[in-house]
Length: 248
Image (cartoon, rainbow, N blue to C red):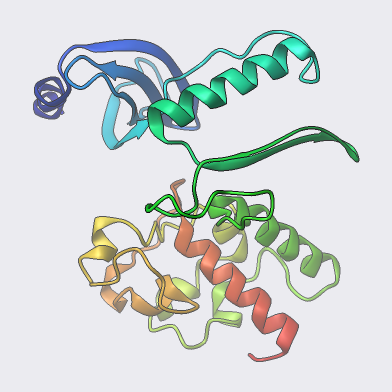
């Protein structure tokens, strides 16, 4: 760990600290590199009990400059002026491209589209431009699972062996449950990691049941832990498709 910290110092130089956020056993440290002037999110895992020793460096991501939001109502003219100015700053400095809408109930009080939808800068983003929701899709998957449970179609305590009969990982599916997938505690991990990329998948799922299909039988040992678990949600979406279509 000390060696890795030293490599961070060599790569990024002196870091200008901004703030730290803690989520479960993960800590996000936001700082600016003295070498390139860019802002980074350094994510660490740490021990829950004092003295909270750092156990692993998970990733380092380039991020926009952290900000402190203005006080006051989101609908106030001051706040909206600040928001417009911040958008202008990011669009100029980082070529930000997005479509933003803020509403309260059915009342829309801020809407703005900016930037381009292609690297050639030929397609300006509009209010009708479609974006990938990324991990925002997880909330819809979770809602569908809970609705199916309310309808008696499944239980969160069901093991994966009930529906994932084509998986080669028989011991795993006999233990892991829908709840483990839903709460990202299955231990499957993220298909965009180096572990999966080394298998030639490059972080792009070629079909449903991605994690359970492509992990070799000997690769999975069931360990309950919290982690980014995109593969788990791919498998949950497959489960939903099976229950809706009746294709089991």
